Length: 195
Figure (cartoon, rainbow, N blue to C red):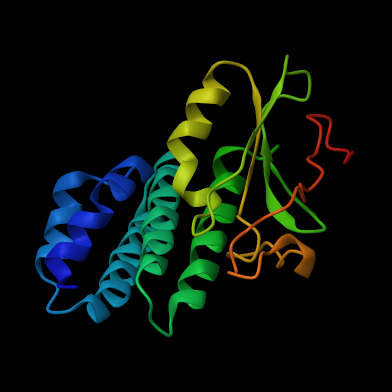
């Protein structure tokens, strides 16, 4: 697959994750091969980390960190050796952003899942955002923000065996390697306890 075809295939996913479409085109137009995808997206994410460091307000710094998390996550979409590092950088940028923007947000982990619980403890409901098999919580930041703006609590997690969620039990996979069965991790309540 050419880099142009790969970028086109990822277009809706990247824009849905919240990156600027014009910046996405600038980054992907310069790719000589799909192997350049990860390094280019890491470089863009690092640019946002620098903007966060240079920001004159904590709000701006937090927003730049959220954008860095998006670019680092998107860097994991093409196969290359540094993809695990990009996932770590996405998680760290998101953690730093939430520390600045939402000090009440907390990381929650359990058997088979890791994610962030955000929103009021007295919310009328809690939405659990479960990404697809090759996705992570950083891909759903805009959706989470929309739900939070409506007064809901949100737990957004990584897919099992992605980023920081541990792999599922072997019985959860079919012989083809795809997910099967009904292994569903217990999700935290808005109060923070696990069920």
